[in-house]
Length: 355
Image (cartoon, rainbow, N blue to C red; front, side, top):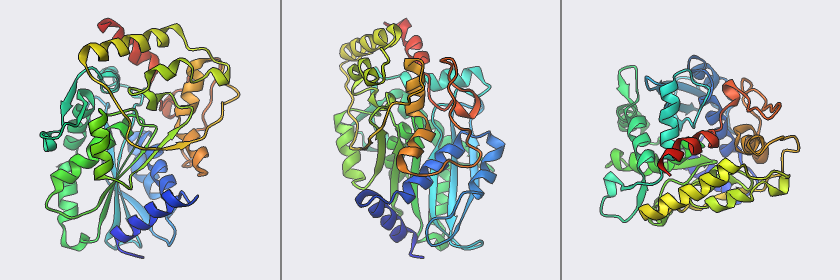
């Protein structure tokens, strides 16, 4: 097997230039793993299928904060047991409303919906790039998560500086809110790991927008080969740079935008105008999607289009064995590990007090 950096480049080249999406599928499977019950995550990573050429996944580090609002894991990929890793994939969990801590749910809504204040990047303060304050707060929390007595930042620093890991490559990966935080975590991690020359590459699925047009340009300059995927019918990536399209996104599916969503769009646009902030997505690959055919409500359709299983279908991959099949019944979103989509209604209801 090639060195970690060479292998990473190979997979990214394959994924962006040909129909082969093997590496992206593996990253999305890790996103699915991140939504499983905390205790099940290491075993689920170890059970993941190998990449082409053979090898094995392992999860030596996984942590969540005390209110369960943020979770991250590190998956190492080795060509054989006992060998040094070629790849380290940091996966940041997205919004998960199946957690048991009510305050953790509030924290997730805040990180999702705090779009009216933008702040500079601490490691590039002179750059005009600005990101949502809630996203940067999520970045700080993820860096400080601790497992086995080591924060994520300390664990990764020790990992890349170990002499045996000279050819290691780092991937930062996330779905939904995890993808949004990934777009900030990847450049922040690269800055924190200097002067290490370890390559860092971000992979995102269904990510809402993290920052302004200057941040989008900054991100694309930093990571021209980044893999970013957004379904053509997913409402979540349209926040916060294309809110007006939420009014019509599911008209082809026969679903009219609910009044609360329509009011929320107007409210958010007004708040952002008053705060003089705007958002733009970095370049992403659009995955052509089709209507679910079974959704009974606008929210059902949004859940279906945003769910990791739907993205897996669009990529031509297979869900991890422990990932439940998406089910919608009577207009009620599925629960437990299926409820991986952040409730747009919850975000809108939270912000109504600001309008």
